[in-house]
Length: 347
Image (cartoon, rainbow, N blue to C red; front, side):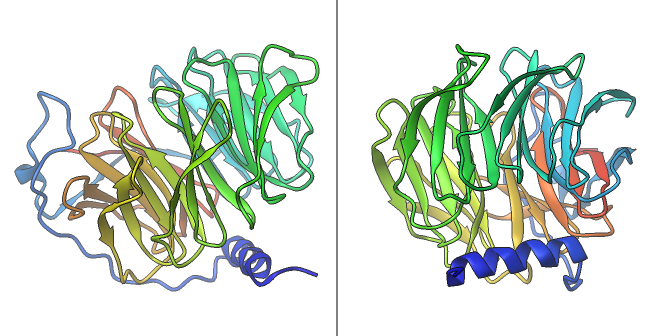
Protein backbone atom coordinates (compact mmCIF):
# COMPACT_ATOMS: atom_id res chain seq x y z
CA UNK A 1 0.00 0.00 0.00
CA UNK A 2 1.42 3.37 -1.02
CA UNK A 3 1.78 6.04 1.62
CA UNK A 4 0.22 9.46 1.18
CA UNK A 5 3.58 10.94 0.21
CA UNK A 6 4.15 8.21 -2.37
CA UNK A 7 0.69 8.78 -3.83
CA UNK A 8 1.47 12.49 -4.02
CA UNK A 9 4.66 11.98 -5.94
CA UNK A 10 3.02 9.46 -8.26
CA UNK A 11 0.27 11.97 -8.98
CA UNK A 12 2.90 14.65 -9.53
CA UNK A 13 4.71 12.52 -12.11
CA UNK A 14 1.45 11.73 -13.90
CA UNK A 15 0.49 15.39 -13.96
CA UNK A 16 3.88 16.33 -15.32
CA UNK A 17 3.63 13.75 -18.07
CA UNK A 18 0.14 14.89 -19.04
CA UNK A 19 1.01 18.57 -18.90
CA UNK A 20 -2.12 19.69 -17.07
CA UNK A 21 -0.69 22.54 -15.08
CA UNK A 22 -2.34 25.94 -15.16
CA UNK A 23 -0.78 28.97 -16.83
CA UNK A 24 -0.07 31.81 -14.45
CA UNK A 25 1.31 35.31 -14.73
CA UNK A 26 5.01 35.64 -14.19
CA UNK A 27 6.23 38.62 -12.17
CA UNK A 28 9.57 40.42 -12.27
CA UNK A 29 11.14 42.78 -9.73
CA UNK A 30 14.24 44.92 -9.33
CA UNK A 31 17.62 43.25 -8.91
CA UNK A 32 20.19 44.76 -6.57
CA UNK A 33 23.33 42.95 -7.77
CA UNK A 34 24.55 41.31 -10.94
CA UNK A 35 25.02 37.57 -11.53
CA UNK A 36 27.16 38.26 -14.57
CA UNK A 37 30.93 37.87 -14.60
CA UNK A 38 33.21 40.86 -15.09
CA UNK A 39 32.66 42.66 -18.38
CA UNK A 40 28.93 41.93 -18.68
CA UNK A 41 26.12 44.42 -18.00
CA UNK A 42 25.30 45.30 -14.42
CA UNK A 43 22.09 44.17 -12.74
CA UNK A 44 20.63 47.64 -13.16
CA UNK A 45 20.77 47.08 -16.91
CA UNK A 46 18.56 44.01 -16.38
CA UNK A 47 15.66 45.82 -14.78
CA UNK A 48 12.49 44.09 -15.99
CA UNK A 49 14.67 42.09 -18.41
CA UNK A 50 13.56 39.08 -20.42
CA UNK A 51 16.21 36.48 -21.29
CA UNK A 52 16.89 36.09 -25.02
CA UNK A 53 17.00 32.70 -26.78
CA UNK A 54 20.33 31.51 -28.13
CA UNK A 55 19.39 28.00 -29.24
CA UNK A 56 16.45 25.58 -29.23
CA UNK A 57 17.21 21.86 -29.15
CA UNK A 58 14.50 19.44 -30.29
CA UNK A 59 16.24 16.06 -30.24
CA UNK A 60 13.96 14.35 -27.70
CA UNK A 61 10.62 12.69 -28.35
CA UNK A 62 9.23 13.03 -24.84
CA UNK A 63 9.59 15.32 -21.85
CA UNK A 64 13.05 16.41 -20.71
CA UNK A 65 13.76 15.43 -17.10
CA UNK A 66 17.27 16.85 -16.62
CA UNK A 67 19.92 19.03 -18.29
CA UNK A 68 23.60 19.45 -17.40
CA UNK A 69 26.46 21.43 -18.90
CA UNK A 70 29.80 19.71 -19.39
CA UNK A 71 32.61 21.02 -17.16
CA UNK A 72 34.05 23.05 -20.05
CA UNK A 73 30.63 24.43 -21.00
CA UNK A 74 30.89 23.20 -24.59
CA UNK A 75 28.29 20.44 -24.40
CA UNK A 76 24.93 19.79 -22.80
CA UNK A 77 23.65 16.40 -21.70
CA UNK A 78 19.88 16.12 -21.59
CA UNK A 79 17.89 13.24 -20.12
CA UNK A 80 14.35 12.38 -21.15
CA UNK A 81 11.31 10.25 -20.55
CA UNK A 82 12.01 8.89 -24.05
CA UNK A 83 14.62 6.71 -22.26
CA UNK A 84 17.61 8.43 -23.84
CA UNK A 85 20.44 10.70 -22.80
CA UNK A 86 21.67 12.98 -25.57
CA UNK A 87 24.91 14.97 -25.64
CA UNK A 88 24.98 17.91 -28.00
CA UNK A 89 26.97 21.01 -28.82
CA UNK A 90 25.86 23.92 -26.63
CA UNK A 91 26.63 26.46 -29.35
CA UNK A 92 25.19 24.76 -32.44
CA UNK A 93 22.70 22.18 -31.16
CA UNK A 94 24.50 19.49 -33.17
CA UNK A 95 23.97 16.03 -31.68
CA UNK A 96 27.30 14.65 -30.51
CA UNK A 97 26.16 11.26 -29.25
CA UNK A 98 23.16 9.64 -27.63
CA UNK A 99 22.78 6.84 -25.15
CA UNK A 100 19.93 4.33 -25.27
CA UNK A 101 20.86 1.83 -22.56
CA UNK A 102 17.97 2.45 -20.14
CA UNK A 103 14.71 0.49 -20.29
CA UNK A 104 12.56 3.16 -18.58
CA UNK A 105 12.41 6.92 -18.03
CA UNK A 106 15.77 8.59 -17.53
CA UNK A 107 15.39 10.91 -14.55
CA UNK A 108 18.81 12.51 -14.03
CA UNK A 109 22.20 13.09 -15.62
CA UNK A 110 25.62 14.22 -14.34
CA UNK A 111 29.06 14.79 -15.87
CA UNK A 112 32.32 13.56 -14.41
CA UNK A 113 34.58 16.49 -13.43
CA UNK A 114 36.98 15.72 -16.29
CA UNK A 115 34.15 15.66 -18.82
CA UNK A 116 34.98 12.16 -20.06
CA UNK A 117 31.95 10.36 -18.64
CA UNK A 118 28.27 10.87 -18.01
CA UNK A 119 26.19 9.15 -15.33
CA UNK A 120 22.45 8.72 -15.77
CA UNK A 121 19.69 7.54 -13.43
CA UNK A 122 16.48 5.84 -14.41
CA UNK A 123 13.16 4.39 -13.35
CA UNK A 124 14.66 1.03 -14.38
CA UNK A 125 16.40 1.14 -10.93
CA UNK A 126 19.89 1.54 -12.37
CA UNK A 127 22.63 4.13 -12.55
CA UNK A 128 24.62 3.79 -15.74
CA UNK A 129 27.96 5.36 -16.60
CA UNK A 130 29.00 5.79 -20.20
CA UNK A 131 31.69 7.34 -22.33
CA UNK A 132 30.60 10.87 -23.18
CA UNK A 133 32.27 10.78 -26.60
CA UNK A 134 31.16 7.39 -27.88
CA UNK A 135 28.05 6.58 -25.86
CA UNK A 136 29.58 3.23 -24.87
CA UNK A 137 28.36 1.98 -21.50
CA UNK A 138 31.17 1.28 -19.05
CA UNK A 139 29.26 0.56 -15.83
CA UNK A 140 25.79 -0.38 -14.67
CA UNK A 141 24.94 -0.03 -11.00
CA UNK A 142 21.94 -2.00 -9.74
CA UNK A 143 22.05 -1.40 -6.00
CA UNK A 144 18.71 0.40 -5.58
CA UNK A 145 15.47 -1.47 -4.92
CA UNK A 146 13.26 1.13 -6.62
CA UNK A 147 13.48 3.85 -9.31
CA UNK A 148 16.56 6.06 -9.13
CA UNK A 149 15.51 9.70 -9.06
CA UNK A 150 18.79 11.65 -8.93
CA UNK A 151 22.52 11.28 -9.52
CA UNK A 152 25.52 13.47 -8.69
CA UNK A 153 29.25 13.12 -9.35
CA UNK A 154 31.75 13.99 -6.62
CA UNK A 155 34.13 16.90 -7.32
CA UNK A 156 37.14 14.55 -7.39
CA UNK A 157 35.39 12.22 -9.82
CA UNK A 158 35.96 9.03 -7.81
CA UNK A 159 32.46 8.73 -6.31
CA UNK A 160 28.87 8.94 -7.49
CA UNK A 161 25.85 9.55 -5.29
CA UNK A 162 22.37 8.41 -6.26
CA UNK A 163 18.95 8.96 -4.69
CA UNK A 164 16.00 6.66 -4.98
CA UNK A 165 12.37 6.13 -4.14
CA UNK A 166 13.62 3.24 -1.99
CA UNK A 167 14.22 6.06 0.58
CA UNK A 168 18.01 5.82 0.42
CA UNK A 169 20.98 7.76 -0.84
CA UNK A 170 23.86 5.57 -1.98
CA UNK A 171 27.49 6.48 -2.56
CA UNK A 172 29.52 4.18 -4.73
CA UNK A 173 32.99 4.02 -6.20
CA UNK A 174 34.22 4.30 -9.76
CA UNK A 175 37.19 2.10 -8.85
CA UNK A 176 35.34 -1.11 -9.73
CA UNK A 177 34.07 -0.51 -13.24
CA UNK A 178 32.57 -3.97 -13.54
CA UNK A 179 30.14 -3.96 -10.66
CA UNK A 180 30.06 -0.56 -8.96
CA UNK A 181 31.27 -0.73 -5.41
CA UNK A 182 28.80 0.59 -2.84
CA UNK A 183 30.63 2.48 -0.11
CA UNK A 184 27.77 3.90 1.94
CA UNK A 185 24.00 3.78 2.12
CA UNK A 186 22.32 6.73 3.83
CA UNK A 187 19.04 5.77 5.49
CA UNK A 188 17.93 8.92 7.29
CA UNK A 189 15.01 9.72 4.99
CA UNK A 190 11.57 8.28 5.71
CA UNK A 191 10.15 8.89 2.24
CA UNK A 192 11.17 8.84 -1.41
CA UNK A 193 14.41 10.74 -1.94
CA UNK A 194 14.02 13.05 -4.92
CA UNK A 195 17.29 14.94 -5.24
CA UNK A 196 20.97 14.81 -4.23
CA UNK A 197 23.97 17.14 -4.64
CA UNK A 198 27.64 17.18 -3.58
CA UNK A 199 29.21 20.13 -1.85
CA UNK A 200 31.97 21.82 -3.91
CA UNK A 201 34.69 20.42 -1.62
CA UNK A 202 33.24 16.90 -1.74
CA UNK A 203 32.93 16.63 2.04
CA UNK A 204 29.13 16.78 2.23
CA UNK A 205 25.98 15.71 0.45
CA UNK A 206 22.58 17.38 0.42
CA UNK A 207 19.36 15.54 -0.36
CA UNK A 208 15.61 16.15 -0.31
CA UNK A 209 12.52 13.97 -0.11
CA UNK A 210 8.77 13.90 -0.72
CA UNK A 211 8.04 14.66 2.93
CA UNK A 212 9.52 18.13 2.47
CA UNK A 213 12.73 17.32 4.37
CA UNK A 214 16.22 18.27 3.20
CA UNK A 215 19.31 16.82 4.83
CA UNK A 216 23.03 17.51 4.85
CA UNK A 217 25.27 14.47 5.31
CA UNK A 218 28.90 13.83 6.06
CA UNK A 219 29.93 12.23 2.78
CA UNK A 220 32.57 10.00 4.37
CA UNK A 221 30.62 8.62 7.30
CA UNK A 222 27.01 8.96 6.13
CA UNK A 223 26.15 10.83 9.34
CA UNK A 224 23.20 13.20 9.09
CA UNK A 225 24.47 16.64 10.13
CA UNK A 226 21.61 19.05 9.37
CA UNK A 227 17.89 18.53 8.90
CA UNK A 228 16.15 21.38 7.09
CA UNK A 229 12.39 21.58 7.57
CA UNK A 230 11.59 24.83 5.76
CA UNK A 231 9.54 23.17 3.03
CA UNK A 232 5.92 22.10 3.34
CA UNK A 233 5.79 19.95 0.23
CA UNK A 234 7.96 17.67 -1.88
CA UNK A 235 11.52 18.96 -2.23
CA UNK A 236 12.22 18.74 -5.96
CA UNK A 237 15.75 20.15 -6.11
CA UNK A 238 18.77 21.12 -4.03
CA UNK A 239 21.96 22.90 -5.12
CA UNK A 240 25.07 24.05 -3.24
CA UNK A 241 26.40 27.56 -3.63
CA UNK A 242 29.85 27.69 -5.30
CA UNK A 243 31.51 28.61 -1.98
CA UNK A 244 29.84 25.65 -0.24
CA UNK A 245 28.18 27.63 2.57
CA UNK A 246 24.58 27.79 1.34
CA UNK A 247 22.01 25.52 -0.23
CA UNK A 248 19.19 26.54 -2.54
CA UNK A 249 16.14 24.28 -2.51
CA UNK A 250 12.84 24.29 -4.36
CA UNK A 251 9.66 22.31 -4.08
CA UNK A 252 6.01 21.60 -4.61
CA UNK A 253 5.19 24.04 -1.80
CA UNK A 254 5.71 26.74 -4.47
CA UNK A 255 8.84 28.18 -2.84
CA UNK A 256 12.44 28.91 -3.65
CA UNK A 257 14.58 28.92 -0.51
CA UNK A 258 18.22 29.62 0.35
CA UNK A 259 19.57 28.44 3.70
CA UNK A 260 22.79 27.99 5.64
CA UNK A 261 24.25 24.57 4.84
CA UNK A 262 25.71 24.05 8.32
CA UNK A 263 23.05 25.49 10.61
CA UNK A 264 19.88 24.95 8.59
CA UNK A 265 18.94 28.58 9.22
CA UNK A 266 16.90 30.08 6.34
CA UNK A 267 18.42 33.10 4.62
CA UNK A 268 15.43 33.89 2.42
CA UNK A 269 12.25 32.24 1.23
CA UNK A 270 10.25 33.23 -1.81
CA UNK A 271 6.81 32.04 -0.82
CA UNK A 272 3.23 32.12 -2.02
CA UNK A 273 4.14 31.47 -5.66
CA UNK A 274 1.42 30.25 -8.00
CA UNK A 275 3.10 27.10 -9.27
CA UNK A 276 5.38 24.30 -8.19
CA UNK A 277 9.13 24.74 -8.69
CA UNK A 278 11.00 21.84 -10.26
CA UNK A 279 14.69 22.62 -10.46
CA UNK A 280 17.38 24.98 -9.19
CA UNK A 281 20.92 26.07 -10.13
CA UNK A 282 23.46 28.66 -8.94
CA UNK A 283 25.34 31.09 -11.15
CA UNK A 284 29.07 30.29 -11.32
CA UNK A 285 29.97 33.27 -9.12
CA UNK A 286 27.24 32.50 -6.58
CA UNK A 287 25.36 35.79 -6.81
CA UNK A 288 22.22 34.44 -8.49
CA UNK A 289 19.92 31.44 -8.38
CA UNK A 290 17.90 30.07 -11.31
CA UNK A 291 14.65 28.17 -10.82
CA UNK A 292 12.67 26.01 -13.26
CA UNK A 293 8.97 26.69 -12.82
CA UNK A 294 5.79 24.93 -13.82
CA UNK A 295 4.41 28.24 -15.10
CA UNK A 296 6.59 27.73 -18.20
CA UNK A 297 9.33 30.12 -17.10
CA UNK A 298 12.84 30.19 -15.73
CA UNK A 299 13.29 32.81 -13.03
CA UNK A 300 16.58 34.38 -11.91
CA UNK A 301 16.89 35.50 -8.28
CA UNK A 302 19.33 37.66 -6.39
CA UNK A 303 21.01 35.11 -4.11
CA UNK A 304 21.41 37.57 -1.23
CA UNK A 305 17.95 39.12 -1.17
CA UNK A 306 15.66 36.62 -2.87
CA UNK A 307 14.46 39.31 -5.27
CA UNK A 308 13.76 38.06 -8.82
CA UNK A 309 14.98 40.24 -11.67
CA UNK A 310 15.07 38.28 -14.90
CA UNK A 311 12.55 35.93 -16.49
CA UNK A 312 12.74 33.63 -19.47
CA UNK A 313 9.40 33.14 -21.21
CA UNK A 314 10.29 30.93 -24.20
CA UNK A 315 8.85 27.59 -23.08
CA UNK A 316 5.34 26.42 -23.96
CA UNK A 317 5.11 23.70 -21.33
CA UNK A 318 6.20 23.21 -17.73
CA UNK A 319 9.93 23.79 -17.22
CA UNK A 320 11.38 20.76 -15.44
CA UNK A 321 15.14 21.33 -15.28
CA UNK A 322 17.73 24.11 -15.37
CA UNK A 323 21.54 24.23 -15.61
CA UNK A 324 23.91 27.21 -15.57
CA UNK A 325 26.92 27.15 -17.89
CA UNK A 326 30.18 27.12 -15.89
CA UNK A 327 31.98 29.60 -18.13
CA UNK A 328 29.39 31.39 -20.25
CA UNK A 329 26.56 33.69 -19.28
CA UNK A 330 24.05 31.18 -20.58
CA UNK A 331 21.44 28.87 -19.06
CA UNK A 332 19.90 25.67 -20.39
CA UNK A 333 16.37 24.68 -19.43
CA UNK A 334 14.31 21.63 -20.37
CA UNK A 335 10.56 21.29 -20.50
CA UNK A 336 7.84 18.66 -20.52
CA UNK A 337 7.45 19.06 -24.28
CA UNK A 338 10.88 17.57 -24.94
CA UNK A 339 12.44 20.96 -25.73
CA UNK A 340 15.70 22.34 -24.35
CA UNK A 341 16.24 26.08 -24.61
CA UNK A 342 19.64 27.74 -24.31
CA UNK A 343 19.34 31.41 -23.55
CA UNK A 344 21.40 34.45 -22.76
CA UNK A 345 21.04 35.53 -19.15
CA UNK A 346 22.21 39.07 -19.91
CA UNK A 347 21.91 41.30 -22.93
